[in-house]
Image (tube, rainbow, N blue to C red; front, side, top):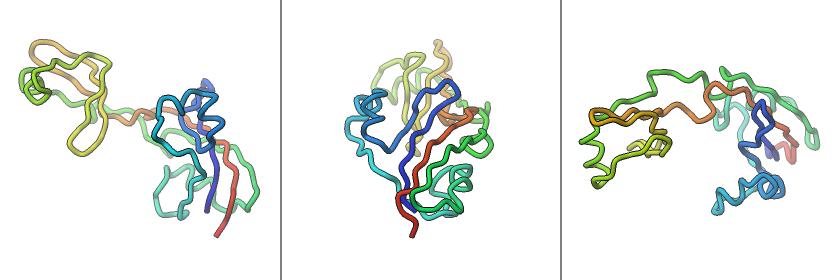
Length: 148
């Protein structure tokens, strides 16, 4: 199935879209200049997309437009303390070529995940690796381009 979409948070902030015009209007295109904004093609049921979106697309016909509201448990889950990791400040500084991380900055984990630095002192650095959209209810406006 191929579909165009725009994803919003409860406060109407657009966090993702496949539409170039929406990306330009909302500043996403400027924030992600290398990204190509184009309809997404997925195999329904292949777990390529979040569960709630996958379920919401089932049975939609070509040309259909739909607004899907997806609770956190069918999206990125709830934030969890398990995803907050603590590092020894000196060891982390050594890994970062002597630089001390700052609260609010992002670090990339070895597995490619992004974590936000949430605490820094002389002893420890705490990094939150929860998905950015954990705990959020997501609303997707979708338009089915092709069903195959």
